[in-house]
Amino acid sequence: MKIILTTIIALLLTINSTFSKNFNSKFLFTFTLHDEYELFNSINLFDIYNSSNKDPLIKKQINLSREKLKKQNIELLYNFSSHLLNNISILVFNESYKINKKNVLKQCKKILKIERKISKRKVDIKECRMHNEPYFADWSMYRENESSYKKGVTTQQIIFLYKKKEYVITSGCWEKCEKTKKDLFSMIESIKF
Image 1: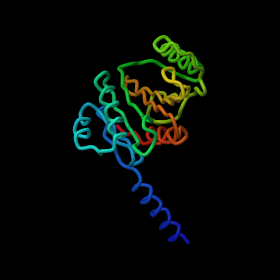
Image 2: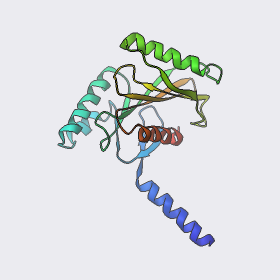
Image 3: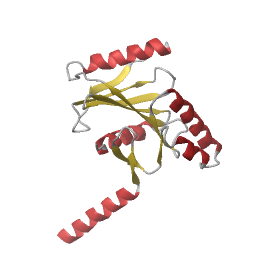
């Protein structure tokens, strides 16, 4: 029985690893995510763009990424089998502040207030709470709301502080938002510095 159980566990781990791949962020950490995702950043975008699929939807996705990358120091992850505009973005800032259970809701409201000033669109928080991953972070929080910028889009975000840097990992989804949320959480759990 013990041999059968060990074999099943080994098989499940092998199957799981065939559906995921490791990514190296330009922000000096690694993570694992489903193998349908592609990582775009200012380092690799043009290589991917020049050798990419001929599919016009994928070309549109890549062009949108290229425009976003020109404006910000950001990394973008797209799952080409998902909705055209579903994505996960990675931003990093030099920061040092504390979030805890007492002030997490205040922080979520502060973020929305900033977004409202830019977008002129009032949305409400769906979820705002402390998060337990990544385990090594000084603190981590999760927030979710309808996008302040585009109707019909859901913003799911994990923000955490580690070594005086604020990591902002955001998924924007139009469809399949539960899957995108699961991917976001899986990514955060796998981060290694």
